Length: 474
Image (tube, rainbow, N blue to C red; front, side):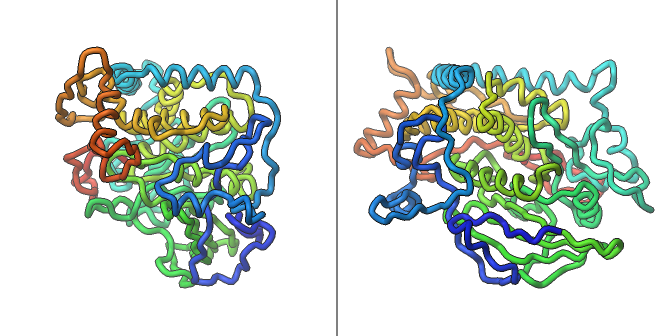
């Protein structure tokens, strides 16, 4: 077991003592470096970052007069010239994004869903889920329509009552990717011990949780860690303790440092759980900065503690939010390695769905992946992110003038119609109207946006084999 401390956000040279203190630590999320990571010229951090208000800007951006950086990094910023093929790929993606209209996004996502359906009729039967429907395993599924394929399901220790070693989780290994993942549904009360058995058997050190325990008065995940710091709890044969919780300045996610002792073997290991707490149960986060910051922390944890082991990612069903994170990570890794030659989110999502059904589950999430990747492209190219860029994504489904139905999953939400003035685009109309109403100020508040509902009639959480509900936007 490694006793190395988790990465600090402010003081890497002075790691926190592993005393299990219950006092939460306030840390700063990793900001974009003050020099552009891929070109030699210096770019002010505030030009590359988006802030909700002046307080957030003051807390994040380095004060030149202070002589101190808000984050000490262990690695120097990359200053080499951008790979020509990668530069061309980034520019091509942004150029295409600027011309996207609602019909293109809808058409792409419709094709993704059609291919998902066609997998059920694969003549080689590579995408079957026979074991998940076994009478012994039905109660282990949170949703009756989100099941792992037999070919790449995670197999845990076979014990009495679980003769197949079944758990609703899938190995994810995208061709060309560096990181291996386990995409899993959130544990149920009946699978808590099996959940920890999977973590133990697979050597998991880093966990990413993208849901709350309760959302909309519905249970989304059974708590699988002690509720109180330094008060261990038993989960079957596993003694689990939370040593500390680190909170970050943006408050959308936190880092729990845990220890797990298997009483059967006497082995003790340390684990790190990143918990993204502000991903809405309907839709996506309103911004991209916090999620990308959390994924930066995930990278540091992986490099220090989990290079050769899979990262466990879960939401409630283990497909929507989980698939979004894994899709983003795949492209981010290629950008960081300088090996990116093409950005094809459409094909990437189809590949993910060949490994676990319904990955990147909704059109809203599909658009969000594009939005995050566009932000990363601008950062690598040294192009400042503007609020107009954010507005374009929030109103992209209006760019054809008529708001078309968003293809997410049945039932399709009812939408209205936005009129378009001759000679202008729907997006320009919306932005212009907003500017007029707000005196030219494009500073958006979360309440000003209207999220697209994903599953307005989401069924209740399952209680057993006779009461399994369909999945929601997980």
